Length: 170
Length: 313
Image (cartoon, rainbow over all chains, first blue to last red; front, top):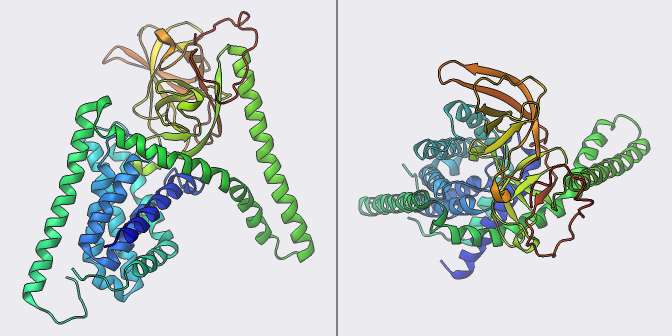
């Protein structure tokens, strides 16, 4: 992949993360905002497959981990989004054929990413993560991600198709 | 698994599966390595340079986006109202929309001004020197932490472990500062511990955030002396430490809601409702130290001799 394409993807990720913490806080439900970075990773995985999805998930997750006001141990979102990207990549065959499958893919990836992030917090003894709070946040996060899927995923899929009209089929 | 529109070939399929496995293993290893590096070494973490680099990039972007989106965010309310009025005639509708937009905007402006004035009053009354700043980004609840980004950084004199206040009272402390932005740990975060003093009895205690996400969480205050009985309505102020960091003394934190003595560990825990509205933060002030550069106009300090408790020296 060319340098130009990589930097275009990089810019897309930076913009996504900025909008997620800067703009969507005004639309938060009980503090939960849609995980735009996850949706972009899922879209990329649907276009390019599990390998690309997991690598992009790692990069996007690191950005989410490092961009202010994120605090705590870096690498947690990286792990969560890498696994989400891989899962979405596995389901791309089905997701290509129906919109419902795409929505289910988003829901599964969102569930996996949010709970993996929470679990890494439990392992690392993050005092903010308690089982009760995870149960509170998880459904809202998954539903909110699903709700904004029609607005974000098709656009992101289009963007990744544009970036690479004839993807290497891994 | 993957139904691809091309002839099936066992070799290619196996190859692809192996490559996918390798990629997943590598990414998982990478993220776990980053976590280990960052978690094991605390303050001198090798990830810290990457973090400050990220704040150099994302800080200005978040500030810019916040400035750009402010009129839109105010306007959205007005637009929603327009739709509700569609049954009325269009002329009235338009008029209402314009008026409402104006009203919403002036309301926000007025509120901002009031907050700014109140902040200036805090500065005058307490003798604290404050650097004003606005909250430009808020961490999501999915991250299980209560942190915000403010648009003042090291060039404005903000550095880690400074106290952040609102006109109402304590907000939190600066975790890390970039050139133009800084990350603030709110007092309601589960990792936040603030030394507090009950104004009534002068008794000391530690306030921990409950980490409640979304709305305003209550703080839990462990009173050091188990014989003290904090009354509901008692005010709590910061206790302060030598050198004024991370919290300067005498900043109002909140009022006691209720108190409970636990027989097991011989301690009294009071629930404290913070004065500052942590879910609707906009203008905040950072209590700066004496050696501070003058890039940002500071709120002036009036009659420090009259102040009962100068606190942050």
